[in-house]
Picture 1 (cartoon, rainbow, N blue to C red):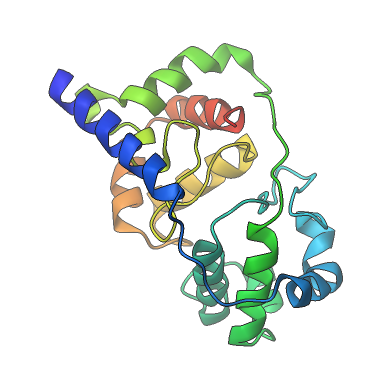
Picture 2 (tube, rainbow, N blue to C red):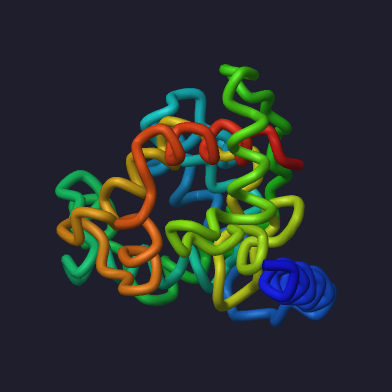
Length: 204
């Protein structure tokens, strides 16, 4: 148990150090803003901080991750009819530009809506659940939910309801295809999903 905890902490420290050397990709944020204002702002906010919990906050998300998600929506490998319609007209350069813009925006801090979920959420996020082989979330997504460029998305300050929806999608294996997350989510109860989502929403 202690060995697994140490491994998770070491991985989290590695993720944190990798953030300082985040790779820079092509993309013109100014051009991306023009697209965001016309296409994305209604759901995700002009600065990437969405008001509705069904729509993810995109501010501060890693550029390559955002780009890959737009590609997946356009190709239909990540299933979402609305996002497929939004992404389909975008060129490869458009997707890089939009991703560059959102990645440079500052995420607004959020507080957990249900503070009673925090103890269990923190336990899962920092230490996992040994009995069901659910690893600590921070091993990949970092102690503050900042993620790791190119590999793991930023989760901190994300809407709790959106995180729960994504965990259920991973578990179902229909809308999102990610074997690692599908395996992890399959071993999480509904209560665990809600608790860790509330905890993550308050990270900053």
